[in-house]
Length: 325
Image (tube, rainbow, N blue to C red; front, side, top):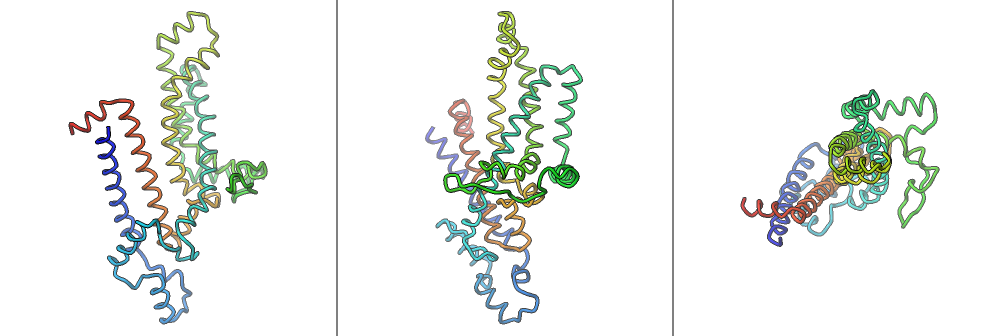
């Protein structure tokens, strides 16, 4: 087991190092932030001073060496635009993205699981077919288009919800969150629903397949033979079994929601990490872009590492196959 974990840790470290090289070269080799940061009428003296202040006067391999040295000390550099620590700037936006992802995940579970179970129980009826067709539509809809349609309908036409921005927040454990402030929910509903639409379709199909399979199992037939009510069969015997893969997928998808809420945050002007990334790309704020991408890489590598270790604990054959390979 220890050998398996050490091998996985080595592979994870290699992936992070390789991505650090690719991310740095991909970001620092494109464009010139001085053209964006300085006014068009800036003279050459001002340009030279700005280039030296940002460290852009050094060769690319020297800049990469400085980046690696700082990275080993947990320093991603200072934002070109805001003049503050890039990592701290991203972390300050993290609560907004986290609460958006958590609410979207809750919507996914509350909408997707019941609809998937109903579709599985009534698969030959018009209700079941309608739900499954709706899940295909959910897969097909681009997030930004769905978000724009929600804005047009609920904000522009009906004027029930605000079109964008983050509503009033409250302080919970030192974090500024709108999740626990009722006045903040109108701003939260549409972006969370937009972020949840694709995942909801995925959960519907998982719950549908799990329900169809479970209904053919002996323990469900035995429960029916004992005369248990349909609600007890579904609530006690069916859900307990179909929720295992659903919870696993939702846990993995939470990381994707946090990392890839970029488009949704941009459509609704939600002040989270994704909007910060888009604004940083527009301004070529290289330290912030690199810090964001490295955080995403480390997060996904960590999730995969934990999943691999958990699988090896649950199924020792995974470790044996790894040793044989």
